[in-house]
Amino acid sequence: MSTKKPKWVVEKERRRKAAASETVWLFGIHAVRDALVNPRREKLRLVVTRNARDRLADAIAAAGIEPEVVEPRRFDVPIDPASVHQGAALEVRPLDWGPLEEVCAPRQDGAPVVLLDRVSDPHNVGAILRSAEVFGARAVVAPARHSAPETGALAKTASGALERQPYLRVRNLADAMRRLAEMGYVLVGLDGEATETIEDALDASDGAPVALVLGAEGPGLRQLTRETCDRLARIPAAGSFGSLNVSNAAAVALYAAFRHRTR
Image (cartoon, rainbow, N blue to C red):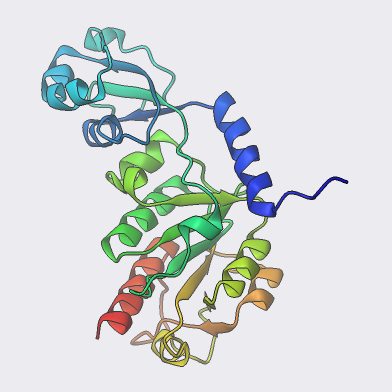
């Protein structure tokens, strides 16, 4: 009699198969340096100019990879020609951080999780990863479809956080939210029209870890995402004019969560 595999096992196997056929080109001195010194990162090919090689000498030695040194005019790698690569590009496999239940297992420090509902701009996701690292989030979680994958642009905006801050892309966001709820997280969706403030929602969590859920600019949270949240909260503003973009909203919410759990 066969037994059905747990969802996280199926998801992990799917990620491994996908990663085996995918590669990502990271570019820019900082993004390449952070990837080179990350032991979790599988590195395939490093293309550098002589100047970049000298600037990355220690990281190249630590990675044990043989660089391909090229002239600046012959920097022929498959990235956007307009990218500011600074003479360094590294082909890598996407990172596999492991299953949601393992990465997001609640800790005593009450660190939050960030969930992104169809946030597809790599610059926004990169900025959110950076804020998540600064304020000690457990992970940033997004659906595998309709969200920003690992790209050079995302890595460059994240300024190294992509190598250190878990970024999990799951098959179904609502399912991931329910699994987090089963683990004890309170799901707080950010909604500019909510009556409750983010501070009130955090106070109402009564010491439980919080998962902050943010939607794409414009559409916001999808209906199912909203319905799966435990609470909806807004970031209070001085007036009715203007609004924060999703990466700024994430930074403010993460700071509020950080202050709440460390006060």
